[in-house]
Image 1 (cartoon, rainbow, N blue to C red):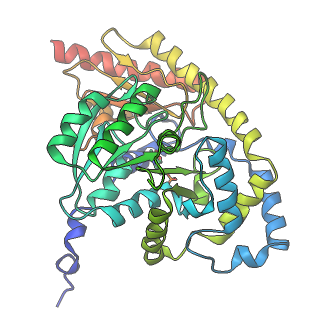
Image 2 (image 1 turned 30 degrees about the horizontal axis):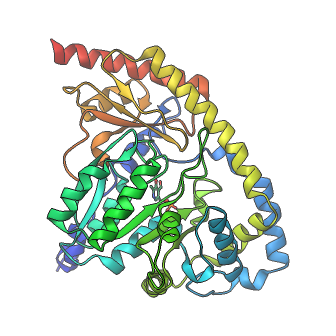
Length: 408
Ligand SMILES: Cc1ncc(COP(=O)(O)O)c(C=O)c1O
């Protein structure tokens, strides 16, 4: 009898989706295609020499810690380093609040494991990070959403949605949002905290891009704002997460969660069943790299490159795009969001764009519902300025043809 694998799989398997971005990336491997699609940091910016040097030191010195099993919570010196970095951002935490994860994608998954029962509601932004939807769909989450504008999540719209749907938590990307590129204003951060406290629900603050600011002032993390106004004994409402993926290298698969101690402990239990602990070698290496004082200067360096590429993308859009197309003005991060005239379908546009050797991610990939048809995400991260201009020139040509066709 032929094995019927599908029949054996649990209900969860039906809820797992594959990322359209990963499908697009397959095309994006063509050598002459200019990809403004993938969310990958620029490989040319990885600090290879410094990492190699730190790695040699780690393997000759702290080799046992690097090669042996470790504790689930994470390598203690790295947790202390992360706590120190967090305190510098105004989060009043110590290592007891920190759980090292295998990328912040695992942080999202662990939050799902701990909090989501089938049919529980999660409030997300429109658009939102596709990986969070994928992670939580697998636990049977239902999504409700509120729009994003130039100041981030529309918090005023969130209240009615919370009152109606009683979500377990709100998921927000406060800095240089993926995909929208926008930043949640300080006033809205305060309003959002007031709201989640009033309704007794949690707030998941996903911050992979906060260190990649090119201009303007840092805005206080929601975790820090929350902690600053807590009454004695109140553990706070926020779970914060970040990652080394965009500042150092995603191949390390190193992220972390910062949470009230009781939540951090529970998340560690959830992690134990998933992978015992995050790779020791990567943790010890990242800690050595940070302790050598290399991270700050490295971030300065990559910011300069990303700023130059962001400027090139903004200039190219202004130069080539037809009237009726709008885009966000990111002050940091890796992404920008392009809104097209109502009738243009970015999925259809993508086929022609790939034929014209330029790629982007259609807006629909970032919606929990069927929104985003006339929008797209562009990244400037991995493309040198001259190629960005050529890519946008090609894209604008294809787009003009589509606009003419739908207006005909
Ligand atoms: C908003 C957001 N959260 C989480 C992740 C996952 O990052 P990683 O697992 O590499 O830390 C990403 C990656 O693109 C992201 O954009």
